[in-house]
Image (cartoon, rainbow over all chains, first blue to last red; front, side):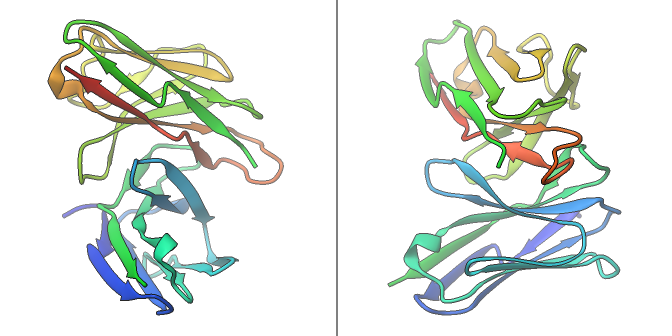
Length: 109
Length: 119
């Protein structure tokens, strides 16, 4: 069993839909990252969370430390949101990340 | 926000040659840099962790003599793939971490990645 599990692995949505990607982890962490990887590979860091909730534009990330679970939400999805979304956890501050397998999101017009 | 650059973004080389990839933190001092590798349709795999001025710590299964990492300054780490083979073709990504950034402490900032193709 992976330390970081994401679901779903693949997600197809229609433009405008509300999207949720989930991440569960089994270890104690100091922070959780949500990353976005577009075709071509470049990675963008979306959020780093250690508690609660963060919002940036149409993106919302939440984390429940007790339940070892985080969600990434995209409101009013758009085709340009199509990418792989990766959850990664940091076990101690400033340390190596352990990555989930990623969720391939496709948003159709 | 903090910016990490990688150079080159793409490189094609012949089998047997060596390739150097640079990772730079442009506006902060990176006490720790991480090198990752990504196989097609797979998640990232940590190769090694380097702290400025000391030897890199390699993950199990990563050949340190093949993947040479140098972190000579607080803004630059290099990964050299020596005697490259086609199976070394991959997407290599670095990230940089700094303690004590004012706006976001201890987070990691990712470079854009380098796609290596070995013919």
